[in-house]
Amino acid sequence: MDEADRQLLRRCRVQLVRELQVADLWDVLLNRQLFKPDMIEDIQRAGSGSRRDQARQLITDLETRGSQALPLFISCLEDTGQHGLASMLRTSRQAAKRDPEAIRPRDLQPVVVGPEGLGLEEPRGVRQDPPKLTPGKLTPVVLGPEELCPTELRPEVLRPDMLRPADVPSGGFGGVCAQQRPRGNADLAYILDADPCGRCLILNNVNFSPTSGLSTRSGSNVDCEKLRRRFHSLHFEVEVEHDLTAKQMGQALLALARRDHGALDCCVVVILSHGCQASHLQFPGAVYGVDGGPVSIEKIVNIFNGTGCPSLRGKPKLFFIQACGGDQRDRGFEVVSTAPEDRAPGGNPEPDAAPFLDKSGACDQPDAVSSLPTPSDIFVSYSTFPGFVSWRDRNRGSWYVETLDGVFEQWAHSEDLQSLLLRVAHAVSEKGVYKQIPGCINFLRKKLFFRT
Image (cartoon, rainbow, N blue to C red; front, top):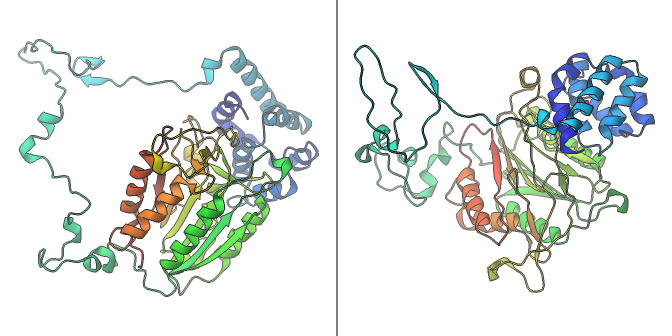
């Protein structure tokens, strides 16, 4: 789906969720091959299964169904007698084609509010004459960092090798070591002392069907083996699944969520695949099965929420995603790095796909969030951040996984998960000519230290 149609759907999302009669649409959507039967079943099971939840999921998934998805959906609305919604979408689409700026999010100018009214802040660095004070009037003053935080009062920036106040026992600094940091305090850190610590499922999609239009992910098996060994060394019971369709991916994840994790302390899911852009409320992007079917990251994460996986309530659930999202599907263009260490002999890095990108702020957030359980104890690490591609070397694997493995090997014995991922982001951002920076979404309630 092109960006104009995507923006249009998001602008009309609230009205569609409120008025869309989904029960009348299922057969028509199948007949027009806009969705497959298993996709329809997933939409029908969304949330609590209410009409609004189904409508919301249908609009979300519609964005992944190709360039003709919106006109086909409009025809489906007309076929089921929902002429008001069909007319609204068709008219808005025609107007957007005439004036593309009408659907583009507007940039807002920050203003400084003073007693005299509203006025734009003067650019920094421009010297002005001192304001003339008038009795009885107050003059707004814009304070810079020097006035807000004088040098002698500024907080000290702690280096990674320095102890933090939270890490120091009440007795002072004497005898402090890594094992005495917050990892042993259940109020400050998750306790990971079970053996095994938890289960780790790796889904590694390498060989895609010709009809999917997706290329073979050379180098992904290298990533898979590195992560299998790494999480095994961190006391996880590791299982690996190769080349699953979108439906099989969902089944494997559901099977993991339905197992009893009562005696375990953590759960890890790793997905290595191609990706695409997808509308979302909290977790962006989607990953492809080998059949070309997308599975949204939001759906994957919600399989493991407190309702779907009660034996993991209050326990950390970690997701590592080596994939991208966007309209490009791994075009395979190559770049030459100026840094010798970023290249393997005879190979150049290639992108998995285009990045996760969501420019719109127009979605039914109040309505959607009210019916979505607040995620807790969840950490999602993405190989790339919105607006950037994720690079993979054919021989050495992806920059993200290679760096993640190296950082965990060197620092996992003494640093918490967030600190480790900061090191990964810094190291990956310095690689190559074309840049990449990993990102994460953190709903953990405490620090997490791996068992080493």
